[in-house]
Figure 1 (cartoon, rainbow, N blue to C red):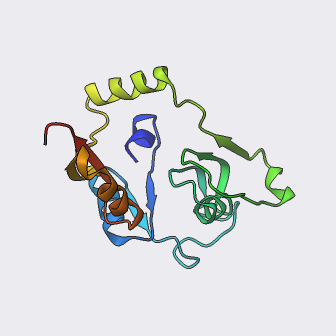
Figure 2 (cartoon, rainbow, N blue to C red):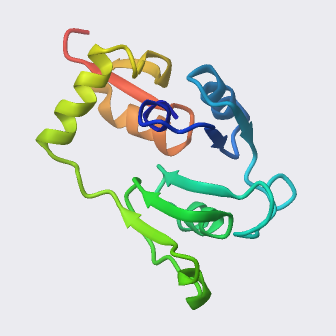
Length: 157
């Protein structure tokens, strides 16, 4: 949400099945939030209300396919893909782009740090838990159970 805003998105819509995370999306700057069901945002790449571009941060097949069906120009996959994503050939009509995020490198990290220093990224609301490194496995369990958004593992705890 904050990165989209930092890079000039005019409207940012948070889409999440979990109500608490939709609330967090509003807290960090989304203009509005919806649940990813057919009625909340019906498919149709060229209908009224279709998104111009979308960023998937989950890497989940269902999320990516949901966005492809509702986005006019481009879907960027920021999350780590764990399964095959399918789409139909008609997707390419109209100049659609499906992009992977390949910039997990030092330059991208430095750019993110600059955005934090400039106050354009506020990560504090995303950190739902702080734990010592000795509880790493328990933290991963919280993430897998979707009981945490981000965990700060503090070496001094």
